[in-house]
Image (tube, rainbow, N blue to C red):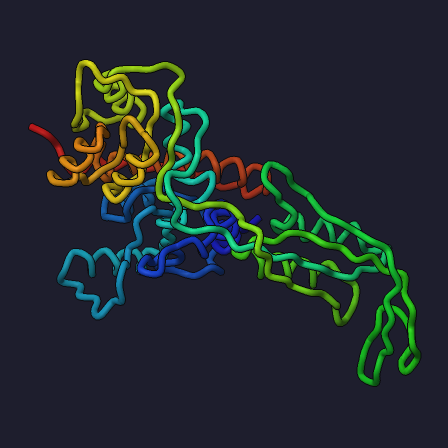
Length: 372
């Protein structure tokens, strides 16, 4: 069975909704078409010549990256420059490129949650607030014959989640009235006659980033030509999204022991450490993938003992130490190279359930910096 790129994207965006991406970011499809058939998938941190070599060797024509190929508008594609040569090669070889960047960083169950779990943290919570999920209530009136079909359809599309509960809904029986006019094709009743129909009022909670998909599922599963429904904004606070996570270790450890754990978990040869190496015991840990020095203040406010992140500058490290916050700089790419370790199992599992019949591979580049 041929699987289209758009089907893969749909499943990726269930994990990391594109609506979470920052305005400055360029997540989503970079090169290609959603209507292309997928022969295989390669997941990598960046799309570069070596990643394309790997994809070609594996017969994969969809490359999913964390970093976008294009961050800003493209003013020219010069085949005499390395980036232009890469773009020409991707297009000529029929490669499709998709990027999940800040949306994957922010998503619940995304990259930061993956890193926190890999380090063995417990009691994991967001570290600060970047966005708060907007919620809506969807109310739709359904004949009893199609009630379960509509309920299942909108729940499958992502409606009805409240905290740790899924498939949450409310229904109430009533009587709906309508008069079909000329040109209509009513499911019930006759043209010109007032119809009274036994219907159920079905209510579910809908997150903003899934609203369009859920409404489409409602319209698809509902038998009426014109579907009476309400979309009501709620004051309820939804999920909190953050670029970092905080959690606790099972047991206190020294800063250097934790640094060794970080190296082992992330597959790194080295990390940089700032703080009291000998006496300081670490229990509460903050972590932020990529360049996370902006999280230093928040980590201090949350009483973290250490912040694990990348791209920390000298004066930023001084500020952290003044706050009593130790640091482990694992490098920007050091924390994000594991994106394949996260997405390959996710896509493999989804593909098995959906019957895609395609292979999903990961490509781990050599870290950009090497200490000598």
